Length: 94
Image (cartoon, rainbow, N blue to C red):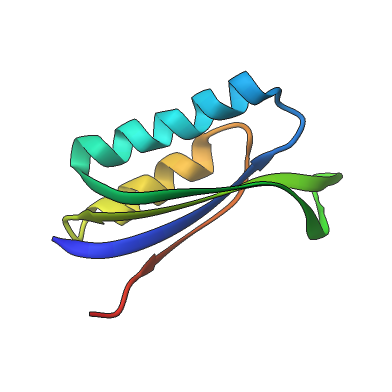
């Protein structure tokens, strides 16, 4: 099991309930393929530059452990999910 950290920026156009459901979807996907160490909700922040004509996004940072092939699948799901503005997955140094 390798350690990873993912940052997810979701659209601020969603209400709190829909945003929580979207992040919950990714949490359950990660839990099905590994273990979550921590979830850090940064909340709504102004973006450095507009993305899809949006100037604010909801930031979430999740630290997790999984098999080395899972982050590619997680990234694929991020890219095909509506409401995700940006995402990044990095491997943590040992």
